[in-house]
Length: 315
Image (cartoon, rainbow, N blue to C red; front, top):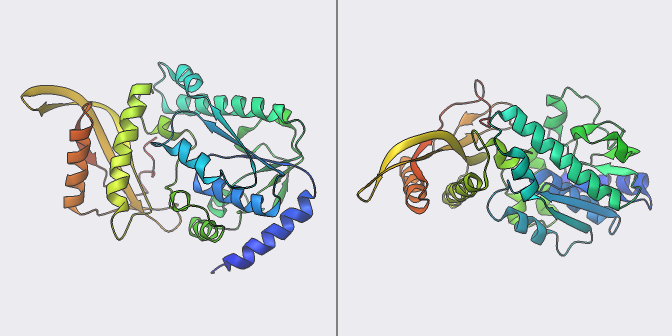
């Protein structure tokens, strides 16, 4: 069933104002589509009452932190950017298990978020960019605008929020993009690919280091650039830095460098997905650019597995 986005926006703004009143609202802004559209909607509904904490853990896509900050520079919100990359990389040193990496990144995010939130004093409302598939996949059935307090995302009870606000909870990803355009968010944000909470931490197989993150950021940027110029784009596309080293030849030198895997999928709801049949000439161009422009990479492979049996992400 199609949603009238303009009507949805008006209804949510009215509800937000009725529930929040003159109180302040806190939002953990990841820079992804959902949290960004949530921020833009709240900024329109309750200007100056919204406080957004953007934790830059150093595991974002190339230049993404600056893009997020620029996207909200002229909106009437209180934008707080926390540059915590050194802290995250230090905690991840030597860790190779993907679940442990997720836990470390999640825990550190919470600690940074909590420390910044406490500086702001008591804020009764926590906003989240939860969308309808999130609720379905988590087994939830209640998609009201405001929920009684629950520990969503592992946020500590010590922050003591009275209510959770989820104004996108009835929307699918495509609807969120439409709402973002309607709210005049930049194309950089509206067309942004979905991104896991732990960021590149789960797209780097094995130990996460500053050097590996830099390599993956460059490879991912090249891949996305070449796909972005196509007339038809996949639902999601990104690069993965594998933990495999492969023999290569650069000039007259024998190398033993990293293997980059490329992933692109088509989907309606992200619950199932099929791999995208990208033209070979495009893949060839991407592989050539990555291996030429990034000295630490010797080989590029393309993932042709659908969901199921695989997931969209590698970890």
